[in-house]
Image 1: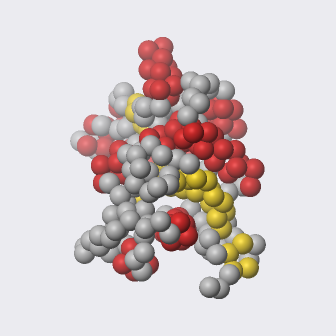
Image 2: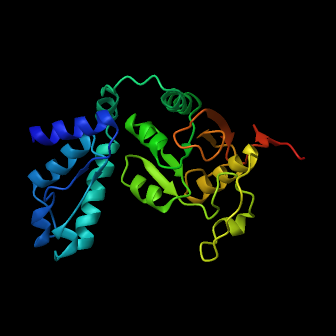
Image 3: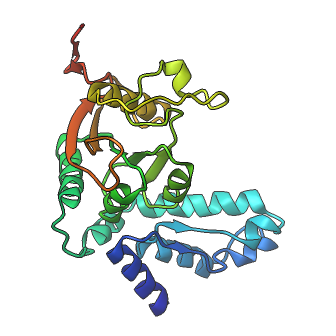
Length: 254
């Protein structure tokens, strides 16, 4: 248990995702319910700040795979709804980082909390900005938009991150909404510096993921300009779910 806590703390400190998979619900290979100790182990891993927890034989070869997954999800939901869990996340001290990208990430987290935004949306190439955001355990989900499959798949393991892989090959998406999600016929386009187009598609993707439900729901968007520059995060913007041309229920018509 001590080594597990130390490993989790070290990974969080350096911004590396950490997955706990230690025969967490072993008895559910043969039993439909876990032991009290197993449920406590799962809860402890979450309280410790793990990015993800994993089943193995319980779901791969056990007699109750669906029940195992449902039980683990139930424990996760109970822990994350606990006020002590949020307090423990905020007591963790990160390494000091004076880079502009880190300043943008910190500002995004504070703004999201202040304006009660529904999500932080981060455009990323290799995931470094999203990992910084996840490291701070913000109070809202992080929508990570990347043009690379490998990046999106890796970010799926990070705490609070919902990766999305747009069809277009740049951050300046100019395709129609229907084409944006047509993965069967990929559409490649040249990069565009139309930031409003980028913001519009951030709103579309947030709606697609179910992170917003009302046109007035707010998103905090971070990006790097010029687009396609790895590690660059130098822009932050608050956008309503209705799009960058709208604010407080009023939309501009060009």
